[in-house]
Image 1 (tube, rainbow, N blue to C red):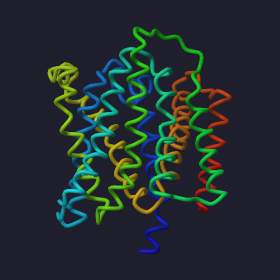
Image 2 (image 1 turned 120 degrees about the vertical axis):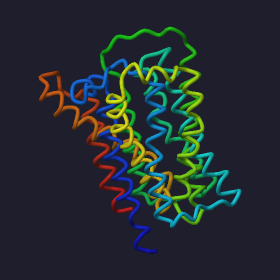
Image 3 (image 1 turned 45 degrees about the horizontal axis):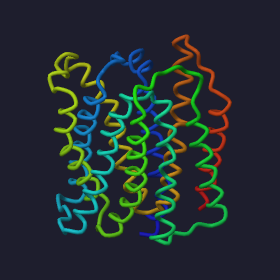
Image 4 (image 1 turned 135 degrees about the vertical axis):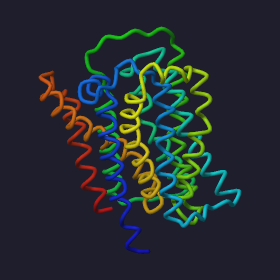
Length: 303
């Protein structure tokens, strides 16, 4: 068991890598250029496919625990709470992006780990060393640097996006905290993830209310399969994140994952954009963010 407890960083790194690649090919330009996914593919349908991509990982999780799913009420309630907070945040995010461009919405929700840190410190009484505190500060610096918008133009059709973005901010900040609670009350991380997958699938009808299922047929199953291939990276990252939270501290893992995933995305995007002959130079803020994020990884490896 003692050896397992030291694996939280490995699980967190897997989450960073999978989410970094997922973020890269979720970009409309790169997704279209390298995978042939139309840039106008509806985000509501992306949610549906993402929810379905959780199923293979959930089946693997069940196999890993010999199909012995924890069905105690408290475990089910906490684990479903994790899934509903995450999936609900995704749906609200899609709605927010209808009212404002991503470079306005994402900075507001990117610092959601501050909610996790505050809840973990005050309720769970989690503590880290002085070096660990420096790592958390560097993680937040990285997140803020990546959130600073570049010189782009966009339109804001309604200020309701601020309220919607605030909902996502709160949902995702609380989700990481509840994930730690769920891991504390459930004998295995796999059960937590299975209920997360169930919660994601349960909300599919809500996505269909926002966009008709017939929309998928308009793009063909080939495009949907490519979107599935991208979205399953998110599911794998979510799976390993559950393990990271089981063996590590939520107030460390939440900012670490959110800080370092954009580094992978940024570096990979630079290479792919350069190959495509497009502008691949990162901004000064992105460079600062990468330095801060990489530094906090080294610090947390000693925590």
